[in-house]
Image (spheres, one colour):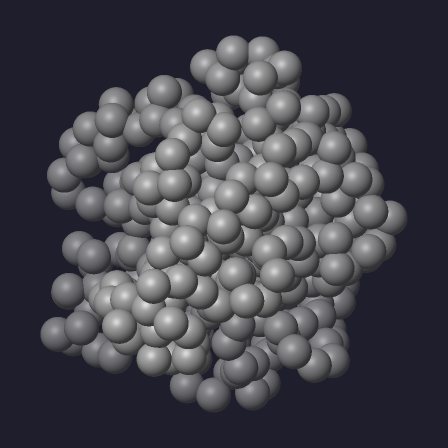
Length: 151
Length: 204
């Protein structure tokens, strides 16, 4: 390839390569590097399947009536985690309801753990600094982790 | 290209717990994931969501990749799948759902293949640039700056006679051509299967 290219063609290809790298935000690259922290965690990845901030139609109605409440749902094959952002805390429930522990993992720093009660409810207080992710282990052995959450 | 030994080595090292190998994989291929999100016209928030899912999946899969050399293809396919999934989630709550369909048609496999080929070439060129001696990097960086600098400016900045800048630039480009990163890439391209197959089932 480059053998057949004259200097200008090679230089233009180099320019393109450099600008493709520059286009990528630092936050995007840093988040990708941080993902490696999950290497030894044998947990299933729960997908974001609902985010009220993407629900344009409903948020228009909510905004005129009440302060809009951010709600998120993460789903895996075995379990769903529903989250609501309250004033000072994060309220959640695992479905189907079961006891366990939930860990809040900030991108930088140590995780904090919270108990999940018999009906699957938990409360994380105060609201963790974004971005963070949740690592949930229920008593029946389900182990799952969400992607990074930014509120 | 399909058997790029450096990618195979990086994947193996990352699977064994080498953080610097992981970071290098990210540096190389983050632009590929980013470019595919851009093809789907995702917002920056959505691009970050897709990115984190793709890299978390790769962490899970590092030890199990059937063909580590095909990592760019695996990343491209996984990113495409995550983009489509996110668009489906968004569409579920929108009144008009025709936009993602149009995007799906435009962003077909051919486009993904083009992105993979461009990502491989760009990664090889950036690695080649990193191999250059500092003086060449400095000189070429001035030519690459935006807006481009004139020979007079470059001459003043590098305290180099204006007449020697052109020949020096040519020498640096020649060194770039001869770097191991670029020659390995060229050899791989010549020896490998036709480029069009790079998006095949091997990455599934």
